[in-house]
Length: 363
Image 1 (cartoon, rainbow, N blue to C red):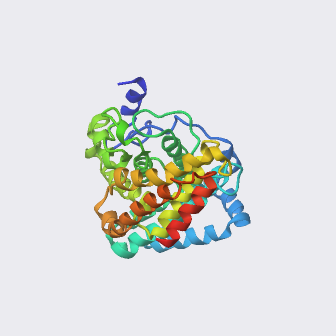
Image 2: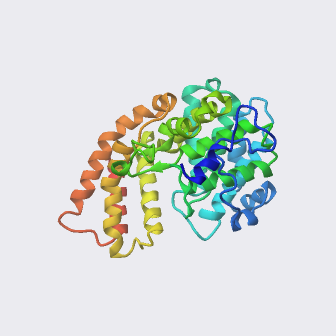
Image 3: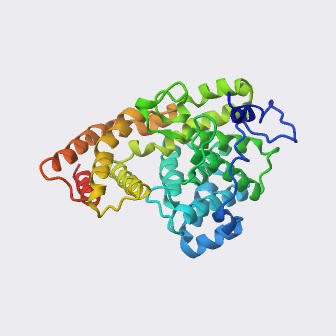
């Protein structure tokens, strides 16, 4: 075990944490520091100001979602945290700043908190979980993708983006009035939910070292990893709840597989555009063509059939039937896209994305 792993193991000592210890499981809170986006938006007031100027509908939509879940609970802290997380994401990687990501931006928060969580609520019913659990999933929607440019890895199988998002989420909770001791359950839940959203695309490369033997979302094997690095976690009610919510959160995060095929295709295009940007490939230039074709053909099949697995029974019941209905369309679209460019290679990535969009529209 590395020194870093040893530090993680001693970050929590039992069901009643000492006030001298940070009351969470993994101990990522001090590994990643605040950046310029945190300084620019230090609190909920500044977040509301930015959103009021740029996207006032986000405030209304998140307030409506949270109010509908509260069941008499005071929603102010949850709303403040959700707005601050969404505004930070929009400033750092969305339309409010200079590093625009086509998928991981402020609209992704609404995709999860409104549309996907809305389907869960509609089909399972509000009584399926306590209000605190639903509210935790809204906060996950707002905070799990806060960082997309982290270069420093975290110990274990948790990604650097996810670990740094956990660190920032804890600071958001602190700023918005949550207490690390009396509100320990929300800190633990956010920590395990965001950690579990780590997505490993390396199915053939996965090994016992990663503990994520199947690739895909870490949430499916998060409990097994915790068994190894924190054997007492199952004795902790907050940790058991966090692991359960982590599986639901990962399913909501990847539920594009179980949405209408048009929405699945749209998310694929957004991710393709984002991937080209991250690789510094201009979609209008020839060198982007092969990358776009690979991602939208083989890559989509690999994600849909090899990597994605539901982590919770609830999400499989809600999104599974549509995933099954999408499966033939994914195969056919991938095959048709590949065939389309066999005799006449694509001139650039934009041509590939336009062809994919047309195939999805006609599917």
